[in-house]
Amino acid sequence: MIKEVLRQLWKDKFARIALIVLGLIYFALLFADFIAPYTKDFSDRTMAYVPPSKVFTIDENGKFSKPYTYNYVRDFDQDNLEIKYSLDRSQKHYIKFFGKGQPYKFLGLIKMNRHLFTTDNNGRIFILGTDINGRDVFSRLLFGGRISMTIGFLALFVLFPIGLLYGGISGYFGGKVDMIMMRFAEGIMSIPSFYLLIILASILPSGMTSTQRFLLIVIILALIGWAGFARVVRGMVLSIKNEDYVLAAKSIGASKFRIITKHILPQTTSFVIVAMTLSVPSYILSESGLSFLGLGIQQPDASWGNMLKEAQEFTNILYRPWLLTPGFLIFVSVLAFNLIGDTIRDVLDPKSKVR
Image (cartoon, rainbow, N blue to C red; front, side):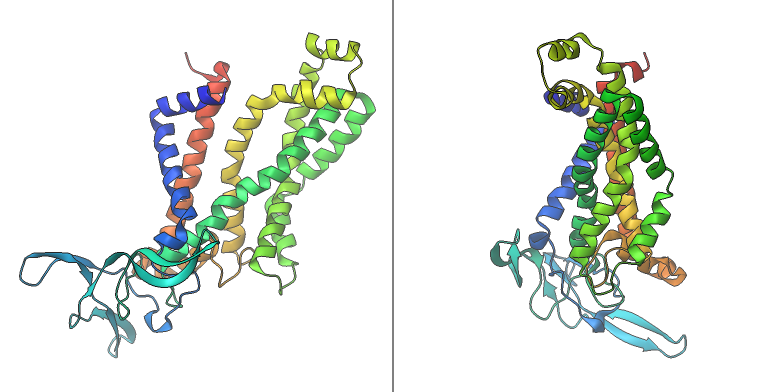
């Protein structure tokens, strides 16, 4: 079934583009330490709000040259009372591919100092400019994306087993058990999820590390989202439990737990795959929203949400548009997941197709 789904996904033009985009994003995030010219701890406060570096391939004589860039020099405009940057054309800084740079651990294991691209020791290259603390936006996008793009999948690993088992038990036993379990699930569903997230995130201890906060956000998202999923699973189980193969399992003495886990829940696979694909974007947006409000991942650690927070100032939107890049990536990622989810739903549910 998985091969057929992948084949149908690849046949659909929009789903194919979405798969390629997500594949490129996750590839870049996986090898972020190598691709990024700077480590996640890099900061040069003398280079605050530097615009994106200009890369030149033609020298002053009009001839082709190895790619090079110039450093920016900061000046203060006394007339307009603002800081301006200009190119220091007194020294070229050639871009080196696979050159030596700041040391890091490749995939968190192997010590390396080679980067996809860098410059000499005195040079600075900022593909997407810098933030208020002089940190390279391009590098932080890669490191921050690891959090924003994985939090959804981690939440699903907690949410879906709980929802599947809870809905399966409720639908199979029925009666008072079903009534009590569903009233509890409906009570969970009635809680405004985003406001609850804000309350829970705001009461977390201030001394928590970003890793601990990240794990707690995953658990909170999972504990909020399982109820709606369990309710749908319960409805499917109610229709499946009277099938002949389930009655046959009962007649040979199979335990109720085995019937639920081995014979009933596997029949909900199509719905589970679609639900998982369509749920990931909502968790990406939830984490980004919390971090944007200052209740998620904290500085100096990066996530797309807390990076986007800096772009909310009107002057930054007008004069430093490169700070809006995290918002663009969030939009692209969520759109790609939704396109894939819709296509999978059409593949696994032929009734939804327009004929």
